[in-house]
Structure formats: C-alpha cells, structure tokens
Image (tube, rainbow, N blue to C red; front, side, top):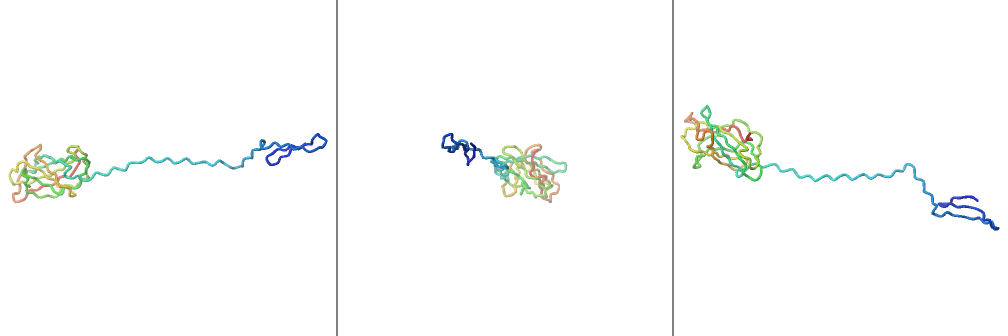
Length: 209
C-alpha cells in the first residue's frame, strides 16, 4: 500500500484482502486540503491615512475707513506764547459707531466768531510733515489732536471762538469751541498791522498720549 497526492486530495492506494485483490482508493476529500504556501516578497499594501481637513478661518477684518465729519466732535483751548503768538490745541473724539482714521493735513483750518463769521487769516506753511494715520476707536474721548499757532491779530477782541477743521479727502468739516483752558480769551499780539493774521499748523492729526 502507498500514498499519492492528487490535486488537493490525499489518496491511499492499497490492495484489498479479498480474493479479487482489487486496489482500494481512499480519498481524504476536500476537508484535507492543503494551505498554499505564501509567495515570498509579497507585502500587504498599506493605506495612507486621510489628511486632516483644515479648520475654516475667518476673513480678516476690513481696515477702518477715513473719518467723516459726522463721526467726530472737536473742542480745544488756547494759551499764549512768549513771542506774542497763541497756540491752540484741538482734540477730536469719534462719536460714530465704528473705528475710523485721520491722516494727512486738514484741507483747511478756520477760526469763527460766535455768530459764525470767519476771522480773516491766512494759512502759513505747516511746521511739520504729517505722521502716520491715527485710528480713532469709538467712544474714546480726545483720541487725536492737532495744534495751530495763531499770530499777529490786529482786529480787536473777537470774543468766544470756534475752530473749524475741514477734513482731507472731502470728508466734511467739524466745528467746536476753542475757548478752553488754560487761557480762555487770549489772542495774539498785533505785531504788523499791515499784514493779515496767520494760522500755522504746528502738527497734524496725532494720537493723544
């Protein structure tokens, strides 16, 4: 008797003890199937992990626009200088609903009497170049300021005064009292009766310390 392998079956070959001497084939059937050998060098393919989805980002906030006159309030005061001139300081507050910026030089600056008439003055060359724009946050009092030097007034006591600042870029004009301390009613000395009084911008819009 012997053993032979055919396909996936184990076959036992033997001789019957009967007189016929016939061969007996015994098959193990499919339950005795052999596990095929693995192929050398074959690796299980790896699956890359999905990349994380980036979190959505908010768009940057738009930069504040230029201040309009309707957003601003102005007031100021005067003090006399040793040379017979008067320095007037004006303070600006954003009373609007959003931040805004002031930059460059005003288009014009005028002094007004209580009845609204304009004092006759000329604009002298600015004493300094304007600095970077100033952002005015809503509700922060006196956040920005500018200063003028008023000289050679020969027109008599003008009474209470207001300052009118015409904003650059066509943003209108803002007007307010400029009779505050330290010297409420001071006016410049008359040095040259033949000359017109002058207003010189000492510094343009700046952040108030």
